[in-house]
Amino acid sequence: MNDYIDTARRVIRTEISGLEQLAAGLGPEFRQAVDLVLGATGRVIVSGMGKSGHVARKIAATLASTGTPAQFVHPAEASHGDLGMVTRADVALVLSNSGETPELADLIAHTRRFQIPMIGVASRPGSTLLRQSDVALVLPAAAEACGNGIVPTTSTTMTLALGDALAIALMEHRRFTADHFRTFHPGGKLGARLSRVADLMHPDMPLVDLEAPMSEALLVISQKGFGVTGVTDAAGQLGGIITDGDLRRHMEGLLDRRAAEVMTAHPRVIAPDALAEAALAEMQERKITCLFAVEDGVPRGILHIHDCLRAGMV
Image (cartoon, rainbow, N blue to C red; front, side, top):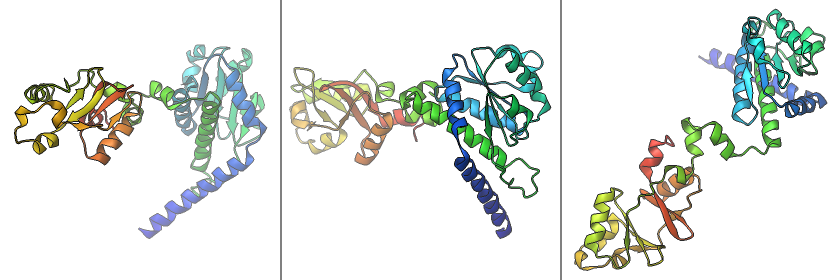
């Protein structure tokens, strides 16, 4: 087992070395690549064959989810009709470690014929891909982690990191925010973490007046099913909340009391535009199950911890 761990550490350290060389070698060509993408009115067409193709798919997905329209085009399919997807409004990002992948020939020729800007990524400066590219991004001559230079490991890791660097540089230039990201990524745990309280809260809230008898408050608690009720004043502002703990503390003569006598004043609340993750953290820290969403003192909805669980935040 130690031998396996030693191998794993050697692989990771070799790839780290490649990434450090990549970072150190970045120059004006990277800035040119960013400017080329920013100048395109269409999409980034990302393409590659084999392992480079898998990396290209991921880069296209990262670009698309961070505000840069992008699409993966398989080079072999491009030769059989999919070149029609690549237009003069687009910019091509073509990946090939050797820069001589034969399946890329038709795609490269198409970009040259129709003056479609092309960014090439390869490890050989004199390769066909980089010689034909408008912007050539050269990968450093770093050792592959397999030790014999056969298995694409360090080279694919560097290409992937270069794609991430391009996506994040574009994202920062466009001032792409968490709200934008949520628009493109509504599903899954990431989407749940970026949800707002307003997205999950219930507008049909349990509410009673300050002067309401406790018999009415108990009925509202039972009907709404949240285990609590808010208490509002004449102006509609939230003055307090009645919880199960409040009921237990006032068991003696409970039905003879008014809501204002039983409630906990100044309860914890949250803004509707706050992140739902912040609301969940507040509920977990306070060991409570509900929060009223309040705007200018007026309750707009109620959020239950189960709403956060159903959204996949935990």
